[in-house]
Length: 102
Image (cartoon, rainbow, N blue to C red; front, top):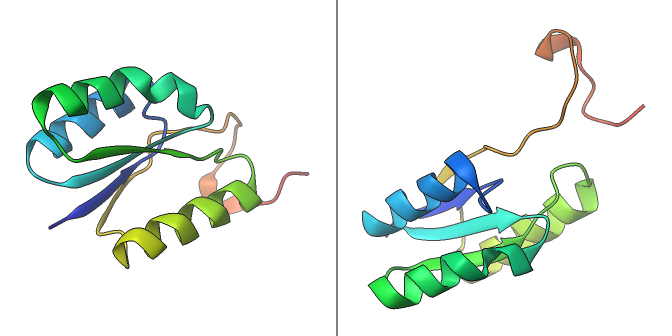
């Protein structure tokens, strides 16, 4: 089984990716800042019998990222596919952008 983690999955492209990969047989962790926003995804997963779970993740908060990855790794052992759809606004070349907030 392929374990897929999708960031920014509460709406839009992230939500569509989460549904798509779950329908293809992946175990999907649909992540979002506010897990309550994932209830429609959970309802759809239940109705369709697909393997989709909601996990809290705020990509702006390193502690949240670490906690999410520890939790998912604890459930599955590893993440096979990451769809990093959540974004942090900013400008400039990625190579010159520090990962820490300034």
